[in-house]
Length: 225
Length: 220
Length: 125
Image (cartoon, rainbow over all chains, first blue to last red; front, side, top):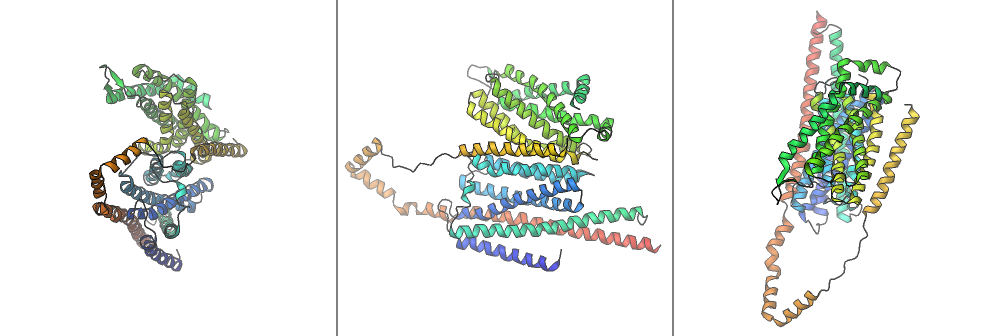
């Protein structure tokens, strides 16, 4: 990855983390029901959006890879898959802590929580298959990623279909003033952060693949045993 | 394609018998775990749990069936022959899915009356919704299961990875089946039809996903 | 099955999805009614008793003073235990991932170096 854009993006992220924390803790209004603990919301939702983005990226590029067999699509899919596991873990952890603060339970099997957990488990399965599946595991994992992506509408709309503890999806567009600024700046920050991490991880994946190919060629040429 | 698979399975009957017996054993084992003494002193299943018995037993035996069905192809190495034949890939996939569907339907034909008999659960009170529920759920499991079993056919850790990879995808389907069945047991038709519609949407979505992915997955 | 059929099945699948999802979400939004104050016989009775029994009236007012509840209220409004836990979780997970990336990068570079050395050695011979 080119050096200058990388440094710029990293600086933007660093500044962004500081900026969004300032906005969330000093500029956003104190919520009337949950008071201070509501501040978890800003990073929780941003990470949830990025979970969806990462899963969709993984699914789309996996489908492309399955169709066209271009290795660079597979690299992006792998990176996106691992990032989906990261963001999913953050969403589940912060959501569970929010749940303890708001409803006095760490976990509740309502629709939104269950479907999110299943989506995350599917992506964990994706990473496991890539790691331990042996040769040809890229295609198998790719199929899995497509199924995970099809699952996303179920997760997103689960709050409107069933009555759940989790707040409605309409809460976000209806935010006002300081909360809205904090919310959307967090989403923007995590979007940049996601793209940054994606490019880094893709780069590493591509390097790993080329290294393996080089080793194969060296073996074939008899240069190493 | 489906006829060929079915003929092979039916002639050997091995898979069918093992699946059915396994499912029955699961039901019996669960009964030891979950029955409690009712007021009259007899052992009674909690009404909410009977659907769980049915569908978990079906899930476990279906996993067995999927793994075994593709095992046969792998051992005989007939997959290559099938792939080289002029039959289109999708027909191959549908053939496997249909044969899995029929196997599961036969297992359910054993498990559901068994539960009706053992637990006095009125599973046949509303036959039409129940039939719709069972057919839709079985179709969903066979389609998704066939794709994943084909995917993992040549993997080293296949037997362990198949449940790991398949169950998170199947859980919404089983939630719908279980909740739909328990709604039917209690007589709440509205709720049951909601879950049947849910199964319909789920099947449609994942059948499309399966069709998209199957073609590219079977090339070794 | 040829391409057109797959496209057709896909379109049908999406159409089914949208149709069923549309009808379902439409039904899932109940109409919201504005809240009305609830007048019950018990309320009128309570008010009458309060007017009669001055002692009880005073007791109630005493226990409802703001100062009595301030401690609990400040606990609720100032509680930031969960925020701290949540942000700690976020940082640990994120930084952990970046650290893992870093280690993987180092390992790749080391493998690359080793390969280079081997090839150079073999090329000399």
